[in-house]
Length: 483
Ligand code: NAD
Image (cartoon, rainbow, N blue to C red; front, side, top):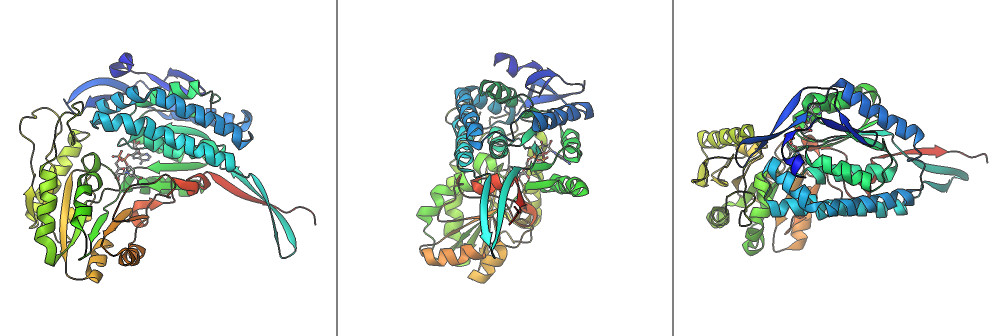
């Protein structure tokens, strides 16, 4: 582990072994809490991507993995879950060093939090009926569910092992073989994943890992040997991946950006909403795709809502991610803080007012820190209300009636999540049905492993989690036996 935390890393993981990348180009890894470069990772080139895809193809054709009874694959997944749990502390520490996620959250989300996905899809694999019979209109059909083939899994940095598990667990359960391309900001933890895969006895070539940046991801998405791409990242990159897949009709899942809204109805109980503000509106410094960064509040209660949110946000402890008292760490990179500062400036230019935050915290001279920020007097047309900031910035938007509130809530190019707060559950259901998003909470907003997750509009295509997440790695074949 100590070795992972520094120095030049030259290996990619292909066919069950770490081996030096063909590429000699390296990407620096910078700790966002002190701005110090502490490691280098390979920036995989075409040869590296081809080697990984060829290994996955060979394993798909020859290893017997796709033909294993799903219950046998489930055993491997359970073993992988245990191997991940065993490495929880190490995974947490290395992720924190790379992306600045507070350590306590990082250990939990990259360790036990991640292993749950492998166990869950193991259970679904156990129940997977590869062939089922159907009788209809006097004819018999055998419906087979086959793995889609070689899957390219491209993930962002903001919750690296969880994002991988959302894809890898169902892909393995389905019988696919895979090539993972982690984000350059958070790659080192995947060397530990490689160790865990070995320990779980996953056959060589079934999972391959190639490191690198945008170009490496693009080479993977464009590779003709990849049958399905499962991509999580920005809407902009997702569009390019979709175009690459369209070329050869590769199967595709896209989990993209968001600008989700918390809609407070006039009867909302602030004692329910306000305790959730930090964890649902700006989780991990707002660097979570489904964060409820817009709060849509009734004008008659606007002051009460703004004051309540501001008090909660102003009370958050900003600090070093290794300090257990820290609630808000640094942003992932200098470019990310620049981006957030530019959005804060644009909010002020367009006429919104900062209620709390708005600048860099005092006493934290090194590190990409920014104060959690709340804007009031936000109009839905402003950039801060329309575009994904990916930082700790909440916009509170007033409305006069329910129809206007819904129009504001649905009035962005995104549609990932949303929540409605009300004292009347039936009214909440009626509004939830009309929110244009893949996931909507009523008086709560926690993701659930069984609940399919994904977006509409610019937030993506397809679903992860739940049985739906497994279905995206399966192809259906109808066999018509002689009558
Ligand atoms: P990003 O789009 O820059 O990169 C994501 C991954 O794709 C990285 O591995 C990157 O190297 C790769 N990549 C970039 N351009 C590519 C291209 N043209 N072809 C193939 N691969 C490419 O995103 P990011 O900055 O790493 O992550 C933040 C974004 O991810 C935010 O927009 C956030 O909302 C989104 N996100 C969405 C979800 C979700 O489930 N909907 C979850 C987490 C993050």
